Length: 217
Figure 1 (cartoon, rainbow, N blue to C red):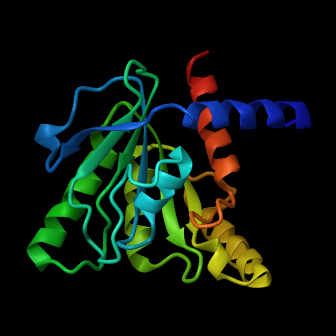
Figure 2 (cartoon, rainbow, N blue to C red):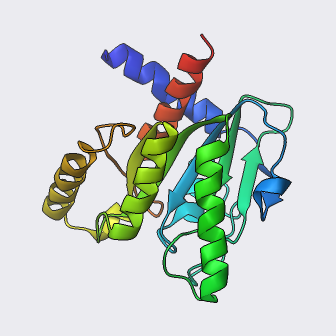
């Protein structure tokens, strides 16, 4: 990709997320999903990996997605879009894995996640968030396998990159990219981000702008 193309995508991403993003829908089950419209981009990850914080950083809206220090607070599929625009929706998914909730409830959220990933025709991409301090865990691999089966393209986004030394971060990126070589639906390159410092947000916005550009042709 040329520098000129990069610059255009970065600007397109900036404009895309400078819009008035708003909450539109919450679905506790597959039966209550909103009607499909445009492209949907979902954010998946372990509980407390920082999905809501990432969405807030992307949109520049500190309170758009609810954040909490208690894992498992997001218990539904939460949809955001720009009123009057049907080109792109963001989906904040329930965190999988550890949560301060009954095991039966956690199992129900996990089932919801897997069903949504397998059966949503408008789902164009999933960003799987991985804590840069810990890397890919077994519970993440189960979600990656589901995505491979569903043939939905996905990309790994490392979160909390500001909390890792630069040398350790590069090693984490390399080991994550090596692990992705075994997964056919995965993008080969990994994005490193920090919601606190906004590092990597420009690249993530540009990636979504590129997706919209490609799907509109």
